[in-house]
Image (cartoon, rainbow, N blue to C red; front, side, top):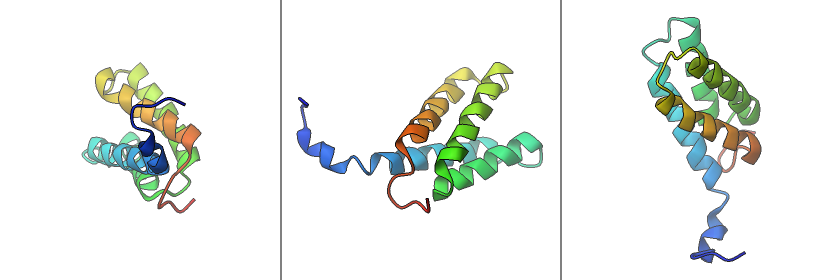
Length: 102
């Protein structure tokens, strides 16, 4: 495969870790103020599971469905939820990556 920087292919195992940290941290920041409601508690729990790397693929599937439903009801702006949805789907296919309990 042609690439501008082929040496970066050596670090491809780190990519799911970066995505996991970004999605988990974003879910924690997004749903921490609303943790007393069921939606907020689910978002917070899913963020912790993804951040730690525990049951990452089922949690990212649940987050993808959850974020789709959130954007359908327009509870948050779609510009906020669609990148998180893309990260959740990427983690669903890539797996947990480095430093995960899976």
